[in-house]
Image 1 (tube, helix red, strand yellow):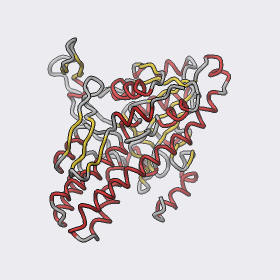
Image 2 (cartoon, one colour):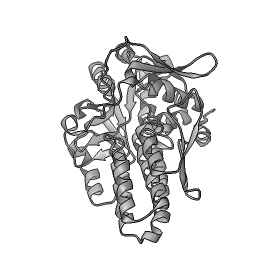
Image 3 (cartoon, rainbow, N blue to C red):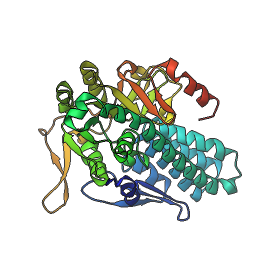
Image 4 (cartoon, one colour):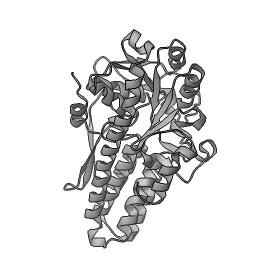
Length: 374
């Protein structure tokens, strides 16, 4: 079977930690799929800009970039003052994704007690360890989630049409994590194991991460997919053209509320109305154990209105342009995320298995996390 998943992300890794050069090399995701541009981040400010301007995006990859950014900053000066400044600067770049704070706190706790002379080298090792752990985590998410696709493939409906139809929203593949992905990891795994999988790719306005990034990833991997307008998802579910939905998460609460790209909540509502199972794939580092109520407690990032008012595209010669599509003077609101209540989530798929989105089901994982064993 032709499956180019591993080769595809090895050709285009979203992040490389280059300790010997003292920098991070990233794939500029704001230019994809129209331009393949890599950028070297050689300062704290460059790393912070890459996160806030979304050259890198996706909760796990944001965390890895922050970890690398801390190493870049300490390569310049490793004293306590610069360590504090680096943590504060990177933590302020994106308020919603909890992996950012998690990675910084995890690294800073080790670095503060290390001799100043050893901190830079230790920071690079910690960042590399975090990257390796993230890759293993995503692979396990793929293993656990693939079982759901295998089961879906046995349904009468899937057998009749000859494929399993998965709907996803935003991008939660290797571009968002470094390897495999979260929501797409089960798709890659199942496809590799022979499941005839097809993906409905939501365009994911306003930044079009589905149209630009997920479609590009799936094409690179040779996985059948079809791009659909965001507003078409409910229509497809009504007509029994969606077997299951799988999305990622930027922050999940201790009771199972899920914060993901804006528009996720609407997909969950449509799924509930049509009896379509709605799954969320995430590493345990994405669960905020200090937070119960996601709707009132998760800070929702509001981004610049130009992301709504303007669209980027390429002309016949390949040059990129921003094109206005609304009347001059029109204002826009641009919340980047929304919260899906736990009652709409069938299960959470993580590196430790598949769990109901309830405090009771998540309690064993919480105990492990609080004991420092995750």
